[in-house]
Image (cartoon, rainbow, N blue to C red; front, side, top):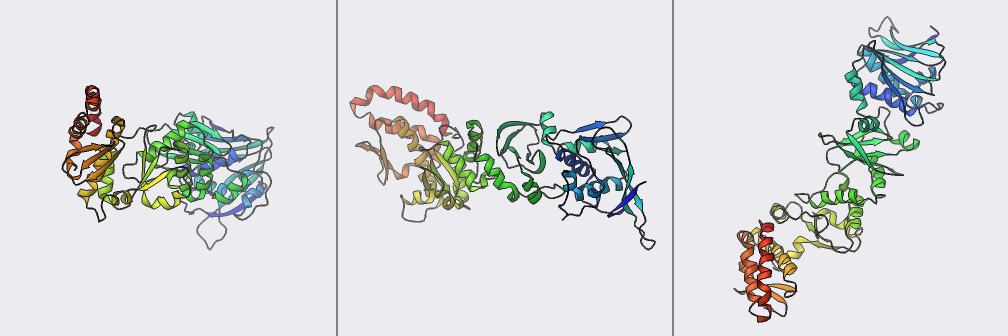
Length: 446
């Protein structure tokens, strides 16, 4: 024995880490030490497992590193030396023996009493001499279950790609957009290929290309799960560099298919949201803002949009009201309509649920009337009259004709308008064709 190093951790040391967390740290450190992140994880067949990197070596001073010590040579294991000591302690206290071997040294942990007055033994790193031809570091774990290793490897993008759980679909200078192929549905956040977080609300997984300064300043020494606010700006940089229509369409679909009008995941970030909207459709989108807390509005929204989620043809984007002020400054060439303000055009009074339902039913109805009768109708007005009429391409709609029940009888309403139009003999030859079109549309209203 050349020497022993006190790492100031006792045999009763309690850590939130599991064995797999400790192995994750050892693998991450080994990856940090190689330029391309390539390492070997080998089952030796004798009940031991080796984690090997070629090129960099752990030196005795790395075990004496404190969390604030930054005066290290070019060994990233040294940079995360406190995490390295934690990993060794967690494994050793769970009866997994560790032996670390380099070209010059062998290291292994050992319990030693520091004082007769204290029952708890402390962990020391025993340092012995060694002679090997290759330069690198091999960490050998004895009495270690392979399940711990498999669980640890799930924290690395390279492993999840190899296993077919994830697929890189887009790369740029900021990072990578990754499609999750796992049925569990969790989306992972990686920094330089090492998992630092996860989410069920994100559209994709991401790998952030972090610089050395990023790791030193943002990633905790144990590479634990990070809160989204730590990496959201880096995530935004990746998304705002996207030009791929397929990926942007996926974000867009998530926006328009929200059943409550609320947003989640990456789209909570207002800059990301604005970017996707601006990329999708520069001219045709009307953005309607749903007032928050209005349950009747949300129910109507679900009803009216049940069959209207075609990405390319969708003209109305519905969001929660509290996004409006931020979005107004960021959306290009968009007409932003606040739904409740639009409704007030029809009534100068507080509308109850029945009245709101009537107005939205009319809007749904008139959308189809104008689409298929555009030659004859250009505008519409709601009137107190009991009958439809068409004058100068304006359709006058009896206010009392529409309610929730009549939404299911929309065919009858359209046919009524067609009959009004056909009072003019010039239109009669087109009636049969028009009625056939209407018959095909009826399914969209149910």
